[in-house]
Each structure stands twice: as structure tokens, then as C-alpha cells.
Image (tube, rainbow, N blue to C red; front, side):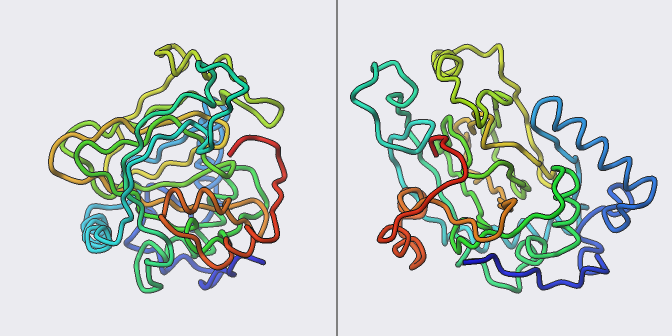
Length: 296
């Protein structure tokens, strides 16, 4: 099981010309002085708190097209309302009720799964573009990154209607790349606790304090349409606060992995998308392993 190879020519970013502000963000020439400066600036921000935001990454004319695209696809979103803990897992009766694994909050939001996003869309062309992937890999300090082999979770549109929220949670991979295409009238604030856990441990005590209302470790962002965010979401607890007003909040999620063949847990696919792909059903029958022992 391997991720699909990028379809675009490694030698050119011409397919992204006009879609990305290449004058401000010279990702077409990462070996240049300007390209190296951009990479170093992004790396410094990630090292500082696990998040970098590139403001106005997309020029206004392309942003209009992106907003129309996600608006067209948004009716495909699967919505569900459920109670979930930060690990998208069941509770643990052997632990106290105050333990993070037993702290459940309302999650009401929608996701357009990757198999609903066709190959002609701008967002899929960006996701699969080798030059864009090369830029992201350089920023996160990897030789290369890979598209998900998971047909549902690799490229996703998150759709939040009025009252919807995504409560405290972690991502399934080490880093995530997102692009807001539509902001709500109010709410929808992105908040996170940088590096609150690590591969060495969950740091449950600190997580419990955040769930109890401790804001001292938190960073809060008001992202705008056209902003590109690179985020270490596997180790930083994060949430999106409830959306206010009748305008939906749309965010494109470009999910990559450091190894080919990454597939999310079948149970998580069922919770988020309301269904599993055949590969999830196969893994459910055969079992699956992860390279770390963290809760999901």
C-alpha cells in the first residue's frame, strides 16, 4: 500500500503560477537566497511553537476561485454530532472521570472526504503538486513527504456551519497543512497548546489543566482566507471554537506523511466520514500497527 506519486512535473511550478503569490513566497526556487530565507523563517516559527502561518499565500483572484470550489463541494460534507475526547477514542473506565481520556465534548462539524474531490479541482492539483510538496518537506525538515494512501483523509475540506465546532483533539500524523478558503461571520477561532505531548509521553496532567480552563499554554489565531498554515498537530492539542453566524467556515486540509502508505485508523474514518473505504475494512480485518504508541 503506497501513496500515489505526484502527477506534476518536478522541474516546474508553472501549474501553481497565479494560484500562489510566488513573488512573496518564492517556492519555485528554494535554492535561491530568497527561497532559503523563506524556509529558514518558517522553520524558526515551527521550532518556536509548532505552527507557521503564511499570510495571503493565495492572491485574491485565485482565492475567489478556491472559495467557489469549496462552496460547490461543501454539500458533500458528512456532518455528525457526537461526544468525543481529545483522542477520538473510547473512554477508559479504569481511569478517573477527570482524566483526559474520559473528558468528552460536543463535536459537530462536516468533512468532505478526499474521494469526493475530483482530479480537476485546484485544491487537488495543489495537493498532488511535487513542487508544493517539496516546499512543505523542506519546511518540516524532511527529505520528502508523501500523499496519504488513505482515500478519505488525504485531502479534505472541513465545513463548519453555525454552532459547529471541533473540540480539543490531536491529528493522526506529525504535521498538517491547511488553507482557509472561507471565514465565518464570527467564532471559528483556532487555538492550540504547542507541543503539549511528544512521542515519549502523553503529558496527561497538562492536558487535563487545559481541559479545566487553563489558557496559559495556549496560542489563539484568527486565520483569514488565503492563509496557509503548517502545523505540528500530532503533538499540539488544538481546537476550533464554535462558528457564529450563517456563513460557513471552509478550510482545506492537505495531509501528508513522512512515509509512504499512511492510512488512518478505520475507527477514526467511521467517526469522521461516516463510512470506511475498502482499505479500512481490510485493515480492520487484518489489524494495523503504528510507528508510535500515542493515542490517536
